[in-house]
Length: 214
Image (cartoon, rainbow, N blue to C red; front, side, top):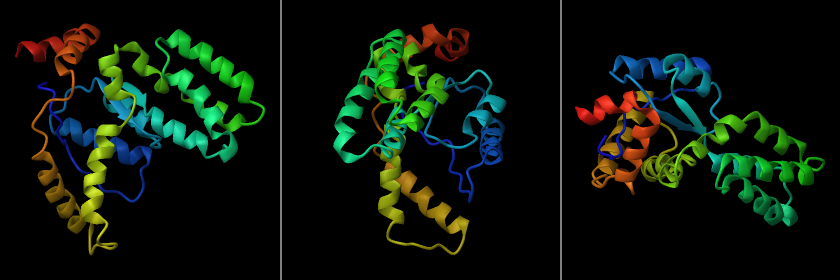
């Protein structure tokens, strides 16, 4: 509630399936997590289903940057700038209505060449556009997984020097120690947190008011 970053847990698994993520969400509940307002994710298989099962009121935001990266896999270099420019009109729109108009124009221009891209955006549209519900301060926090990406970069600095570990516990200990070290730098709340918490209180009402008054 103070706006500071924190780590609720570290899970290591061979396969990121729906059952794996349901176990993660169930364990979070057992640790005392009562509610999740917004969950930000990349293209994790089964994650949305798991969140909805354990925390049915949670709003899910799919990382727009990951979606763009996945889309660009199908675009040749000579057309990358054109496609990116048109996609930017979609995810940088001021409102959901503007984003829908921009996507319609994008679809009309590129559907014949890149039907896979169009289909992917259409299939993920609800989760891709959840951030349009919120003001700019909150949008900046949730439309990408940049906070998690930064944390992952710090972990890779530690783990990249060793390609194999004798057990999951050995890896888990290394990651735990790296997390403790990284968290020493998390001394400041996220940018514009006072504005964000006020807006979140308006959007989520009683789900947040109890915590604010505690």
